[in-house]
Image (cartoon, rainbow, N blue to C red; front, top):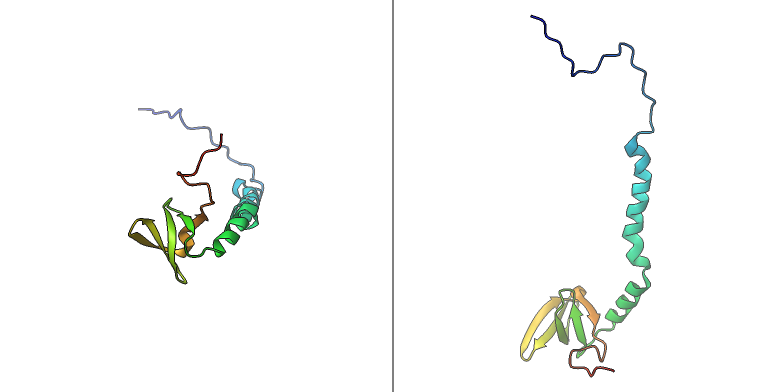
Length: 116
């Protein structure tokens, strides 16, 4: 009984040696490293981010703020690492001070008059 395998490619008895180096990943690695460095340091150079950080260092009692979770509140107490916000009448929450995302500017609230 004779069996023939036609699915296999023919074997080359003397394969040509592959050229050293220059693989796909090694040529891609420098580009990947540059991309990662740019993405990591981009927020440090953002003017908008620097302005926001500058505004947040001046947060004081009775300021209206927005947390990173989207909670609006009024600062009633500040400590080194935490801030206490009043989010409704007699409803207070304690949040990490770094989670205060932005100060609410006057006229931004929902009860501010709309300009036509």
